[in-house]
Length: 370
Ligand code: NAD
Ligand code: GLY
Image (cartoon, rainbow, N blue to C red; front, side, top):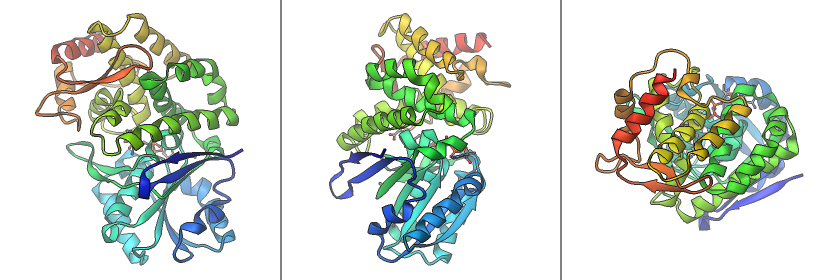
């Protein structure tokens, strides 16, 4: 069954369609957007092997010609080198101003292709076809696009909303368990930041969802996207409330930088650990009960997820070095650290000027437990 969540952004409003068979039916879904029956697809090599042919066949069935470029998989692709390769390729393919670019893949491809679409000929439209849980619940919705810099994560980019999102739940069947669980980190984040009932639902259904229940997966995607769409509609450019979606991310971005943006720590794994650390910091500041961080960790552990710094293999820098990495965060204002903290499960808020001493203490204890 298909679910539709509207992202109500006036002239830039679009639908997130969630269900099965959306890749095979892509021609029918996308045709109404096209000025001419031709699209350019950006994807990665893993996804290309599994889902590109069904997509191209689905497009052809709708009378749409397609060309495709598969980039190497992984976070390292989200940098200048592959970005410039993608943009030059789109120009080579003579993608015009009224054309539509398709992003088939996880958050890496969605972010890179979205940014390419934002700058190509000063902006062309694009459609997200997210194939990871993370991309279906988070990165394909809301219009944040971009790439990483040597100075930090997502520091180069643009807000550019897609024209349509097709979240085909069936594509999650081929996703390796580790990537699925990393995406689950972002799902849990929604419950933790603003919906305790959703967190309870995840405590009850998380295991079945991870085991492959498609109806539960679709419901988790729908509830996550509904929440994100509502926040984005109220605060598209992150003047305020949208920052709540970054719960756990200040810690996560520092950990990703410290581990080299690679296999040692996937983004969603860093988000899960970051959420646990944000709850710990909040408890230390007396903002929430001591039980709250324990409950968060208990659920993450029960799901078999990374939960603590101890779960990251290899060396990590000390607390001061991690704090220095946090200072590159986009939420830093006038050099002051802004964190998303919580007053309990489902009750996040933006905290300005958090005492770095408390954060250092939380990090030192977490590092000592390794
Ligand atoms: P990813 O795109 O690297 O995908 C993870 C892995 O799964 C890759 O190896 C990929 O090839 C593979 N894969 C993708 N779909 C598959 C499928 N259906 N079957 C088998 N393999 C598949 O990573 P991700 O976790 O999807 O995204 C992480 C990125 O998203 C990070 O760069 C992060 O910064 C970004 N992000 C962006 C936003 C946003 O709002 N724009 C939000 C959250 C995260
Ligand atoms: N993933 C955070 C945001 O879209 O704002």
